[in-house]
Amino acid sequence: MTWSGADDMYRGFLTYFERLNQVYRDYILNIQKVNESYNESIKLIERMNEMNKEFVENYAKMNQLYKQHFEDMQRMNQQWFNLFWRPFMGQQQQQEQEREEEDKKKS
Image (cartoon, rainbow, N blue to C red; front, top):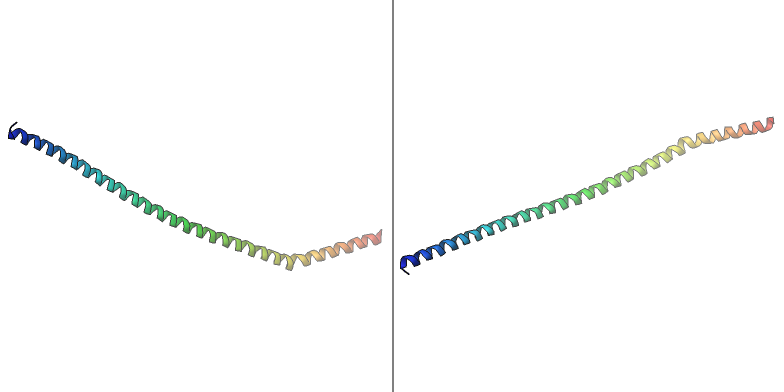
């Protein structure tokens, strides 16, 4: 084997290993990109979780406001009933009792 043959063989191995090294570099860069994508995904998921927590808290506050409104409306209706309808119903019952008494007297 001559020096030129050995030199060609060396250059062939060198070229092969340089290509192999480049493939590994590309692979590592792709893995880094995938890791960056995963990190961004994790950050987005964390942000979504925070937003969902805020949504749940706001929804709970809204439900509390609806509950308070419902209770206020019930109290208002009860007061309205007590102030206006009870006296009216009492007068109506009194009139009915008077009619019944008159009917009994007539019979």
